Image 1: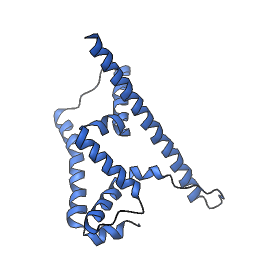
Image 2: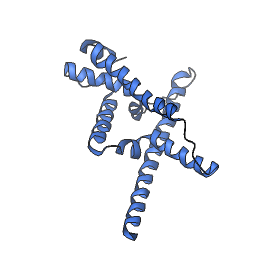
Image 3: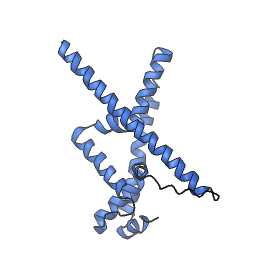
Image 4: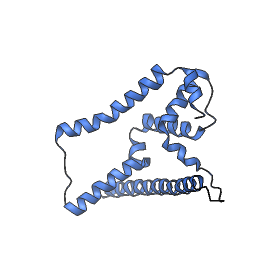
Length: 167
């Protein structure tokens, strides 16, 4: 039993470490992106700041269109290649290792867990929404996913997907 608890705590510590690393990377990319936007929008600046390539991870719609273009036209997105690679890696991880992406890597999963722990510390309990609201909120992400799958993979043709990529 003691070995099981020790193993569980090691796994938890490892998971928290991985979450912290990915959260740090996300904040770092966000700071780089703010610097890029400020340099780009300020006409008096002489500083040139490159757009951080990690921003591609935050373009899942573009990655879906790039996937459609790649499947329909056989052309891999050369404008935002990181977005498509990250999207495919996340899907692959999710298919092979179930919830590993959401619970170890995704910054929203980390934020959600952090807020739950904070709520537990502040209020000594977590609030549970009414069942109907919980079902609605959990289902809403699937409605959004279905919307984009229908419009990108069914209604958008390959030529339109390819034309969208340089935008």
